[in-house]
Length: 90
Image (cartoon, rainbow, N blue to C red; front, side):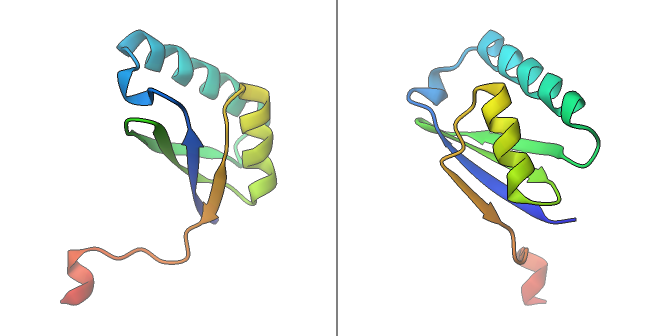
């Protein structure tokens, strides 16, 4: 199944408290349960003004639906075409 990186523009994301993150995760997981097992949240990275999320899903449409139902922005959804790491050079 394809893997996607979602870029979410969220001003002051880096200032979110643990409670803010807890609430966001609960909201996201609630929508994921509703959408079913074809979409999976892997992890997210929080920077100053953006959140980058990694999802496994059959297509962009279900990611857009998750964003809409959860009230999250999904400013850019990019399908991962390949993964490299230090061992790629071995």
